[in-house]
Image 1 (cartoon, rainbow, N blue to C red):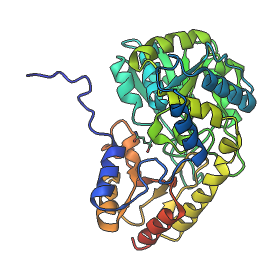
Image 2: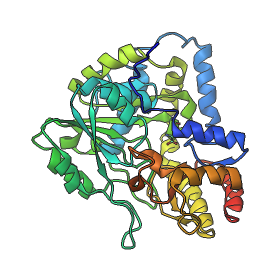
Image 3: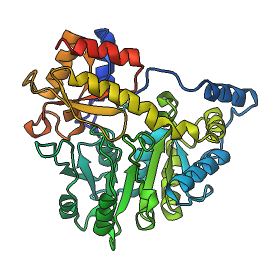
Image 4: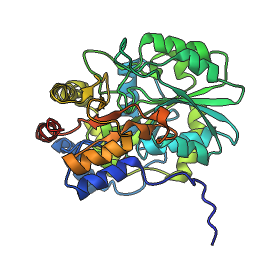
Length: 389
Ligand code: GLN
């Protein structure tokens, strides 16, 4: 039988592949982004209590009302923007479903979607399934003058055409860890004003930002919020990546269209988790303290890698940092990552996997991504092995 694949170029994700390799070789897994420690015991008790109390049937299609209210309250207090929980907040099956439903809702066949490369791996398949065309704009890589990636907004502006439907942004950025500045928001405002371009802002790492800096949400500016779908995920914030609960805040007109897809993609998401999250969110210290919690882990890994032949780049946010391995090898990134797992027992993610064509020379900068959402002893075990590379 001839199966005409809708995604002929897609294989298993790099995160699944590398985590399986880590298991096969019993390697220390600093690859796929998930914590190797448990979530807060109070949150687990709240889920169990919600189940005992009978929250086991379908919750509202757009999400458990008290959870939507808690999300709205948090966004108002952090970013000064009010989203109506009834019409402008939607609880989704992780940020992944939020992304998929958003692309399906807004991208028509032939529409162009601008992505800033490198980008998270689910974007292209989601856009492709909607019939959209990806237009990628590269981040400017680190150089001797600047040790971090930067965004050239003139290039983004130059990529805009009459067919541009949507620009997808993701800050704090996976994989580079860069965050947005006020100047970046100015530039986004400048290039989108007077257009019908929708902004999709994937802010799943909004609560993980280092060195006293602040996350700047697109929700924080009226002119941007008016055209934005702002996406986040409880997986990152409460160490519950396996629960797959995220959300989208967007103006009513955008939310109406998003929910048309959401209700037929998943209808709604797990009720006891939503009830528990609504209660847990009443203690803001859980997200307020997250940056400090991850700063220590970032610093531990950064300092440790500085003692090795890797050259780490500092990260401004997310639970990832990149490191250059050009003092160790000239292998392409995928090959190097396989070799590091097999020969040295540490699993990382090749940064080229976040490019459209991972094997192209332009996508290979001798960089790998380390995840530091790990217990200190896991990070120390990895560093001990990496010191021998
Ligand atoms: N977002 C996670 C990462 O970047 C992985 C999630 C997944 O495996 N789908 O590592």
